[in-house]
Length: 358
Image 1 (spheres, rainbow, N blue to C red):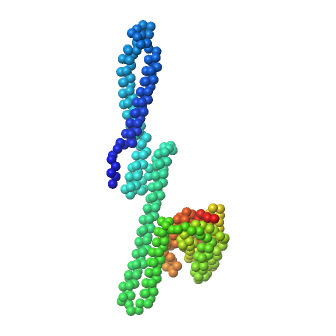
Image 2 (cartoon, helix red, strand yellow):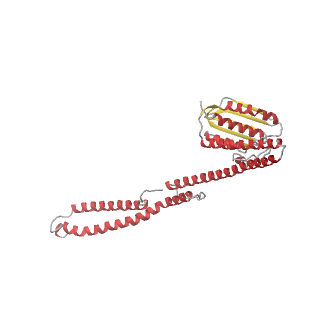
Image 3 (tube, rainbow, N blue to C red):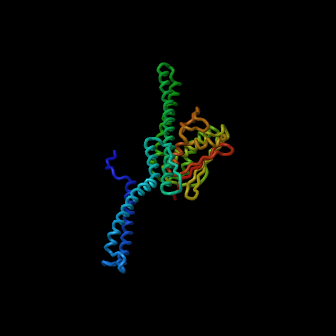
C-alpha cells in the first residue's frame, strides 16, 4: 500500500511554473522600461521645458498601470499555463490509463498515439510494444499450462484405470507392462517440463563447450534408433566452440537429432548434423529428409505439445511434444537464434546460431 503523502499534481506544478516565469519576465520588462524612462525625466517641479510631467507625476501615473499589467500577466499565466500544461500532458494521461488497464489484467488495449514523432510518441510506441509482447507471453503461458494439464492428466487417468483392472485380473503381466509404459511417459513429460522451466530461467553455469563433440555424442546415442529405422545418420564439420551448459546443449542436439529421425521417411532417409564456426557465431545445422511440410506449420513447431502435422502419435518414439520447445528455450537461454525452414524436397532444416568463444 502506498503511504506517501499526496502532493501537487504535475499539471498544477507546470501551471505555477509557467505563471511564475511569465510574472518574473513581466516584472523585469517593467523594471527595464522604468529605469530607462526615469533617466530622461527631470526631477523638478517644472518638468522638461516647463511643459512635460516631472518624475513625481510619472510615478503616480505609471505605478497603477504597472500593477494592473502585472495582475493581468499573473492571471493570464495561470489560465494559459493550466490549459497549456493540460494539452502537453494529455498523451501522458492516455499512457497512464493504458497502464491502469494493463494492471487490471486487460492487455489487449493499445494507445496508438497519432501525431508527429516526439518523446511522448516514442514512449507510447514502446509501451504498445511491451503490451503486445506481454500479451503474447501470457497467452503462450496459458496455452502451455492448459496443454500441460491435459497431457499430465491423461497418463495419470490411464494409470488409475489400469490399476483398478489389475486388482481384479490375476493375469497382470500385460497390464503391468502397459502401466510401466504409461508411467515412463509421465516421468519423461515431467522431466521435460522441469528442463524447459530450468532453461527458461537461465539458471545454469556457463562453461566452454564444443558443439562438434556434443553432436557426435548425441549421434552415437541415437545411432541404434537410426539403424532400426534404416536412416543414415552422419555428423560433419569441425571444432565449434561456444559457452553454456553442456547438459542443456546436449539435450538440445539430442532433441533435434531425435526429431529428425522420428519425422523422416519410412526407409532410406538421411539425417545430417553439421557444425561450423562462422565469424562470431557457432552454427549447428540438422537436416533431414521427410515428407513436405506446409510453410504455415513450421513456425508452430516450437510451441509446446506440437508434434509435426499431428498432435498425437502412438509409436514408441512419440515423445511428449516438448522436443523443439525445449530446443527453442535452450537456444534462447544461450543468447542464440533458432531458424526452421522446410526443405523443397521434404523434411526440415534446423539452424542454431550461438555466440562463439575462442
